[in-house]
Length: 226
Image (cartoon, rainbow, N blue to C red):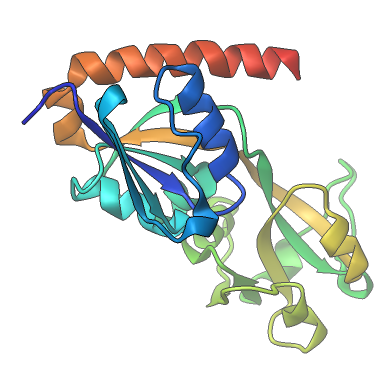
């Protein structure tokens, strides 16, 4: 095993550009990596690295089983997939929020604190891509719900009586508003994280440590600039 060589899994989609730019700032030049090319892996001999391009939900699996030493993945995916990986760093981009939302006409009454009273929603159905996160949130407030897993268009579910609520990730909330949905409870905030295979982290510790320190410095600088 070459202890200086790293295989890094990057997510297809909206996180890819920021991931490539951040790696470039710490000496792993991969600006030619392009999701549109349909190429799935790139050898970077000058950087002693290889980039593989994966579906975001698959990255924790690639890292857990050692097909990749490191991965860039949203905290939302990391929580839902629940794989045995080491979370090393908050990369400070790809911000989104987990929320519970309902149709405007169905929202529960508010408590004196100003929060919505969710107690009347016990044993109701929740449409979501994230059943693990959903169950953990509701069990944490002493409620049981029935998650219905969907792969897209969560906003449709309450409109056709498939579910009383949705749990989804939002950035601005625009899509919810366009579909007459209201946030009734925040769950958590999520950003992109750097994860590592546990064996690779031990075997390639010095290289990974140096990369983590470089990424931490640039992530802080980027966050400060914004």
